[in-house]
Amino acid sequence: MIRLDNVTKSYAADSVAVRDASFEVEKGEFVFLVGPSGSGKSTLLRLLNREERPERGEVWVAGRNIVEMPPSRVPYLRRNIGNVFQDYKLLPNKTVFENVAFAQEVIGKPKHEIRQQVPTVLELVGLSGKEERFPHQLSGGEQQRVSVARAFVNRPLILLADEPTGNLDPATGEGIMRLLDRINRTGTTVLMATHDQRIVNTMRKRVIQLDRGVIVRDQARGVYD
Amino acid sequence: MWSRVAYTLRETWASSQRNVTLTVAAIITSAVSLLIFGLTLLIQHGFDNLLSKWEGGVEMIVFMQAGATDEQRSVVESALNQQRGVVVDSWRYCDVACSLAEAERLFAGDPVTLDLLTEANIPTQFKVVPAEGTTVQTLRALKADYQRGLPNVLSVELAEEQLDLIGRLQSFVGLYTTGMWISLMLAATLLIWNTIRTAMFARRREIEVMKLVGATDWFIRIPFMLEGLFQGVLGGLAACGALWFINGRWAAGVAEFPVDSGFAALVVTGNYLSVVMAIVLVFGAVVGTVGSGIAASRFLNI
Image (cartoon, rainbow over all chains, first blue to last red; front, side, top):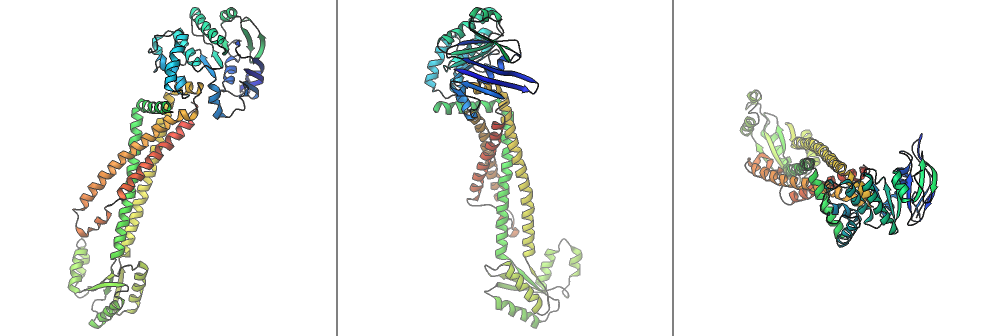
């Protein structure tokens, strides 16, 4: 599903974010990217989404080298990738329903499909009955659930989560992890950047550890360190 | 398809409501620039009318020396009659009394010159109306012939000097109004550009999310471009209303001027006003689309 071959990305001549990274992720895998702040976890996720392009190496997503992909094709790549962020990135002037529907509206899904699919996914994330609320009327955990619902509503092949529990208390974070695990069980490949030791140690999934842009460990059913 | 159209229109409406002040400013600026553009077209058309009127009724005046004899006058009359139906349509002789009366009108504001003119020294005149289709070049040739070959002719004057004056006035007015509408059109384009840029900045979070969930650049751009287009078209409509009103008031005002004032030719009639209004609307749409299109492409990566 995902393959990186000797990928190097730097933002300045003296600052290499990712150095010569290579790994492969199979369809349906759940992978933690761990490491301290600035180790290159977020950059790796941005490379997979084609928000960034590497200086060297190849990034393969769903059988395509996305480094060479023309910009006009990038939106179609992203329709197969869901994104969850630490700060949720919800639209404050839209309701829960509208925030989730937005992801379908902008790719031209017909209204009747939106009306059918959004309640289903809101039920999946445990937000039934809160469709008409605005983000400021929700707790942090609920806002993150909306973010997960928006990322999952188009049934992406891959879900990228960048510190999704970073702003949440441990109990709420666990709820989000259960949700991501559930999504993973539907066959969606999940890559999650985190430095939450407890979650990584509890879940016992594959762990890729980065240190100053270099992959220093790739361990099946791993722990934080 | 329909959901996309509905989404686009909804977003366009929402966006223009978010920036009411800037939107109104952009519409007013484009309306003013388009109004001046339309007025330039109308004024130029009026001058064209005026010039064409003068061309048809151009007069040539043959001034005789004071004290010219009847025989010498007869020679001039014969020369003019020879050209009748060719270059000359008609002519009339303005004798001493007629010339003095005319001088009193022409020099009413210049009593010093008027005092110098007497029955003994005022030149009499042959006022010539050229035949239909006579060009200024032909009249110039005739003027040269008369000055060279006719006895006791003081001078021959053509109305072309006045034509030159109108031509120069037309160029002068044309230059400044054109300069103004081009500058204002540029200002309107920049204002629309800035309005769209501000709208995109205000919605940067939405744009970021749209890109992340796979919206195409065109899908993101189109509501902003439509917003600019509407601003330009609304400015154009306001300018059309103002043009219609001003032209109506001008036509009503000129109707009260003296018949021979020459201003009647500056009134634009017929379909030309409708043509100008259509051009103004198209220009408004172009200004709006160009301004917003550039902004929407340039600031998509905010």
